[in-house]
Length: 535
Image (cartoon, rainbow, N blue to C red; front, side, top):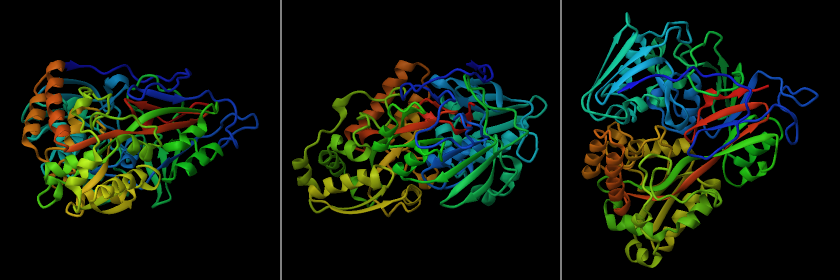
C-alpha cells in the first residue's frame, strides 16, 4: 500500500469553531473585543491583540523530556513543541508529512523519504542517518519506551538509512498494520545527535541541541513554569491543513492543576489557551471572547494489578468491584456529570470500540458485599480525576460500603504514574485515565493487556491474558476493516466480561482559547505545536 503526503499546511484567515469530540477540532476566534475582566497580553486600547507570546498552562511538571520515556499528558504537551515525528495524524486520522515527505508501506515494511531543509536546534542537518539513529534507540530491545510494541509489534525491527536517497527503511519481524499511524506518536519523535549523546541531559531537557521541533526549551522552574522559544531557522512544519495564524515567538507554560484558578486566569487576561475540566467549563458559556471545544481527554476505567500475590488475580473479586460501583454516581464525582458513559476502555471514536452495553457488569451492591467483605485493598489515585481526586474517593467509599478495607492515597499525576509503573507491588487498584495517543484499538488494548511496564510494555496492570494477546496479533494481520473489528470485539468481550477492566466514562476537557489565538485538536487530542496568534 502506497501512501502520499497531503499538501503543505496553509495559513488562512477563516474562523472555525469547535465540533464533535471525536472529530478534529480547531479552536479559534476572530481577534476583536476584550476578554471578560481584562485585556489580553499586549492588547491595544481598542482591545485587539498585539503580542508575540502565548501563555498556557499544564497540570503538572513533565516526567521527562526524552521522547522514548513519555507517559503523561504534560509530557505529550512539551514533546509536540520540541520534537518532530516522521508523520502526523490530521483531521479524520489522515496521515500527513512531518519529517517524511512521502512513504511506501506494506504490513511488514515502511520506507520514508526525509524532507530536505530540516535541521536540529543546533543547526545539524536532519538526514536519513540522523532519523535512523534516533529510531534505533526507540526500537532497541533495551528501549525505555513502553510504546515500542504499539508501533513495531512484539518482534525486532531493522532500521537502515540511505543518505544518498534520503530514505529510512523499517523492516518488521511480523505483520503490523499500525506501523504508519504509530510513527505519529510522541514516543517516536526524532532526537538529534546531541540528545542521543547525553541521555540524562535529554531526560531533564538540558541538551540545547537535542530538539528537532519548532521550539527550544529556554527556561524551566520545577512546579512553576517553562518557557519555549521559537527557532528562527525552523521551516519544516507538519503538513496539517487549515492551520491559521502566526506561531508565537515565545510560549510560556505555567504549572497549575486547579481548574478554578486556571479559569480565573483566562477570564482576567493572564492566560490565553488552556484545558480545563469540571464545572468551571460552564463559566465560558456564551462568552464571545473565547471559543471552546470539549474533547475526551481520557477514558476512565478501573484497572487492577493482576500480578501474582495481588487480590485481583481473582476474577470474582474484580467482578464484585464492578457490582459495587454505580457508573452514574462515578461520573458525577469525576466530571460533575459532564462525562459520557462508556461501554469500552477505548472512547467511542476509536475504530472498533465496543458499543455492546450487554457486556457490562451491572451494579449490584448486595452481591458485591458477599464477595468483598474483609478484603484488603490498596488504592492509588490521581488527584486530577475530579476535584481533589473525587473520582477515587467515590470508588473507595463504594468499596468500603461493600465491606472492603480500603487504603486510598490521592496523589498528583506525576507521583501516580511513577508509583503505578515503577512501584508495581505497592498498589492493587486504580482509576485509570487512558489517553490512547495513537487513536487505535490496539493502543487501547496495549495499556490493559500484554507486555507489562516492567518488561518494556504499556500494560500498567500486568494482566498478560494470552487469548487476548493472540486476538490482538491476529488483528494486526487483517487489512479488511470488518474482519479486524470482529477480532477486536472478541478481545474486548473477554476484557470487559471478565472484569479485567471496568469501563466508566470519558474525562472531558474543554480546550479554551482567547480571542486572537488558535489551537487545533486532532481526533480528540490537542496538538500544542498548532498554537497560533491570529491577530
